[in-house]
Length: 388
Image 1: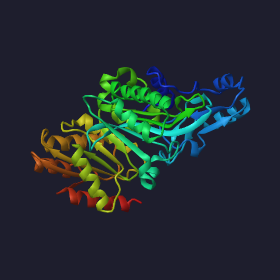
Image 2 (image 1 turned 90 degrees about the vertical axis):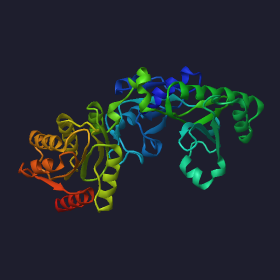
Image 3 (image 1 turned 180 degrees about the horizontal axis):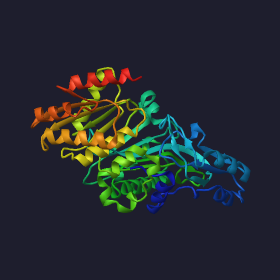
Image 4 (image 1 turned 60 degrees about the horizontal axis):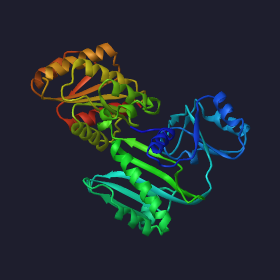
């Protein structure tokens, strides 16, 4: 789960991490109220869950109320498309007004989980404000890392080593130690999966200021972070993903035209791979779970069919916990209830599989059984191509 920048900065301030003073506007009237007394330049930032806002017209320094209103009127209530959320973009419902800072230096700073090391990792670079992915490829020597022992946490010697590598003065090194320790505490106490501050700037008062911030919370820990989970902005998620979440389904929208309904994450990944290998393109990842019921299948069909790009539905179910004949009945009833008109390709395997296939055949619906997953993928790809 991601936070908006203004929400992330509110959390930073709770841990005594300095940020520019800012306020949020949701309407043009609120923009007008915040902008009427502009004396010094302020930064306006569209609030969406995507990077690349600056390059896409979502960030601007303004010097007057007129400029602020012009900028905000072009964004509020509309979608902002960046390289991270194209082609549709995400809706802008809030504009963040922030004071500008007198910047002496820019840094990149982040804390994340390193899966290979199985530790929390601090990443710092003198190339702040730039694309860190490109920096890591072109100038890997500029990327500094410190791995934290899960028992002892972030140690003073580690922040000193980073400060020495960045050639900080003694005074600045002390301030960096305090900042990094606060950021690490924030990260661990709130079960974050990512804390990224880019740029982290040093201002003319020789203080560290988080000029921008991205925070992601581990979804598996949201039950422990009730207050943070309430901050979720569902408008930033794909509408189908939001509906699936509330229905208890694991769904991720993709850009293909073959809708996938599978029980089991590993089987779902294999299904998507085989569709791609067969020359097709999956429209989604959807795991309905091992104990899929007729109601679950019906909800899944509705979500799949809400995607206008879907031309075929591929159902791949292993009947272990539930019998294949029961699953087949659920598919048939759901297809009738939802009114599925596009082809449905079904691959069943497991208990009572022959009975399940017989029910599908005798349903006289646009349902086609496959003997194995490879055949199912090929059949689905063929139907998808025929409907283009």
